[in-house]
Image (tube, rainbow, N blue to C red; front, side, top):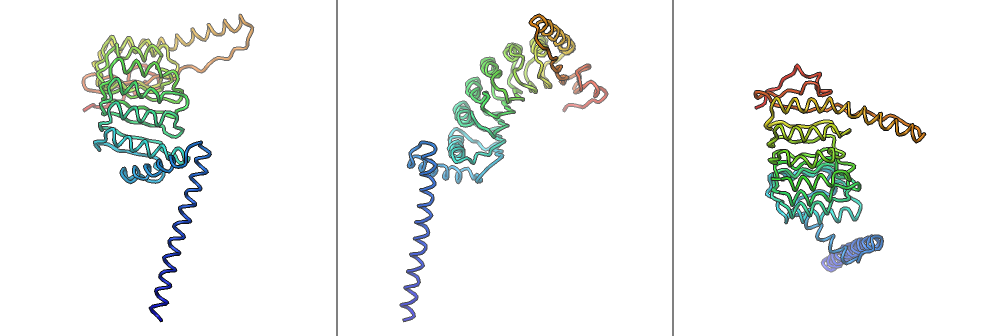
Length: 323
């Protein structure tokens, strides 16, 4: 009898576990059905995406709601990027996208991986920093990333150092810059850019950028003149880093004059606007002056702030040795 009752209890326990599992599955399916109706998607398609998302999460060892991902020197290629995009696509559909910082420095994602990332995060409301340095993107990869430069994307910092980006890639980025209302920093260090590569950025007065990283390129006096044109025209740019370039005293003086001309150019614009407003009998309000510009130059292996470069001029007595 004891054995009989034990067997009955075991059968009841098994039935209870099966029933609970069935109820949980039905509840999850009902939730997916509700979400699919809201998104106007097929429930089976959404279910398949959920399964792929779970596989990608396990493969990449991701958390439930990752806010920061730093994967450096992992040897990641297009395959890993595709898995990651599947995961974040489902996260976005269910309203759990919380990624703020994505750092994939020193991998091998190349142009196809950059295109996948751009399509996935082109209307992200959370991503603010993307670092794709040392990923062999080239001009094609830089052009693919222009999809991110739109008002609907929350991206603030885009770092593309050491990616063999040339004039064509910079030109594509520069054309998209005016529409990137949220972007504040662009990193193009160590891309072998000369005056012709920087010219597209200068033509659009650096767009909405406040910081521009041009370290380790091949800039000379001609590049300094090109930069000077953009500095004078821009009312937003605050910091330009030109360390590790072919800087000279002539280039320094060119940029110094540009900083002085910047204030003069702004005052002339103010006068023209005021005159036009009076002529049209409209109210005129003066705009805020452009912020002081900070940038550095190299002389005899020492890093010095440029004399007269706004806020940095007060630090002229401090000299840092560059290794």
